[in-house]
Amino acid sequence: MAETLIQFGILGCAEVARKVSRAITLAPNATLYAVGSRSLEKATRFATANGFPPSAKIYGSYEAVLDDPNVDAVYMPLPTSLHLKWAVLAAEKEKHVLLEKPAALNVAELDQILEACESNGVQFMDGTMWLHHPRTAKMKEFLSDPQRFGQLKSVQSCFTFLADSDFLENDIRVKPDLDALGVLGDVGWYCIGAILFAADYELPKSVIALPGTIFNKAGVLTSCGASLIWEDGKVATFNCSFEANLTMNVTAIGTKGTLQVHDFVIPFKEDSVAFSAGIESWFNELVTGWRTMPSEHVVTTNLPQDALMVREFSGLVADIKRNGSKPEQKWPTISRKTQLVLDAVKAALERGL
Image 1 (cartoon, rainbow, N blue to C red):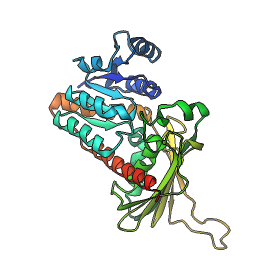
Image 2 (cartoon, helix red, strand yellow; image 1 turned 45 degrees about the vertical axis):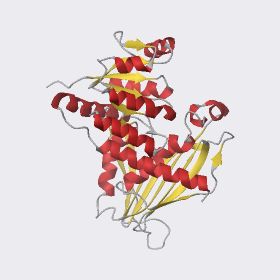
Image 3 (cartoon, rainbow, N blue to C red; image 1 turned 90 degrees about the vertical axis):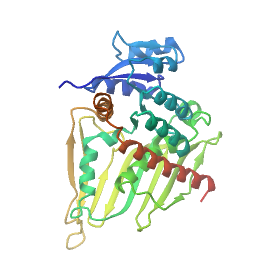
Image 4 (cartoon, helix red, strand yellow; image 1 turned 180 degrees about the horizontal axis):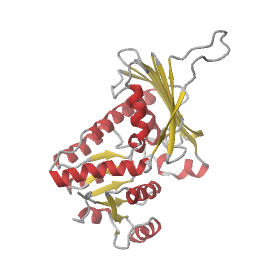
């Protein structure tokens, strides 16, 4: 049976929408159907520049995309402050929602979005692409292996990049009225998500802010970090920043093994990635080197992770459309747990603890 082709509408013309437009084109079960912007001219330029088919609908408003009966699903790369309004409205119009991260300004807003999606029978997923890469499944196999990895004891994650002066002054991610979570929402979302992934989505019992938090003059976070503590004693630490060299690392340490990955959010190469696994590591006899070296595990893929995300989402939407299935709860559950921890980190940072 041929795959059901899911017709996407895109709300807004943000830079990341260029990447996801390409992903929709590459996914075998999705197609670019419509784009809407507050400016018809901007939407037209975006469609022309990003490979939309000649038949694509170009709209001068977000509402028009949601009112189009042929749009199955919408991708929303809007500022976080607009997520609640437009995601809820999309769900009420029975459009499936692929929402850029961070999912919301706080878990109370996210709960309203998720409730709207659930009550209208539409699929929700946030735009965390790395979770859909086949490497992620291979890493989960290692982390879940009691013989090779053992019991998780600690996790460290880091996502930083050095933003230029124009970004730090003008990007929506540093504007309190558009993306008030700043660096915590933009890249801290990934750090928290990686920690929860390693912890099998068990929530920590407490959060402690690390020193060195930096706010811009508008009060938006540009650099921060925190430690997370679990009931059983495992710990995690993350750092995220707009003011340090590009780094995307995760290290998870168990009683028997260690996992390390150095490009967890955006792979060094789209078609071939790696992670290292150290198992029962120890020194040589004279302690001049290691007796057991970490092994490198290479994972290849024919589709980039963003297209794999679209393919997964579109498959779930097709199952709902074709078979009357219930929306998959795995993805909203992951989003909500990430948002809960992000909220706790934000509160700790604001307390200065």
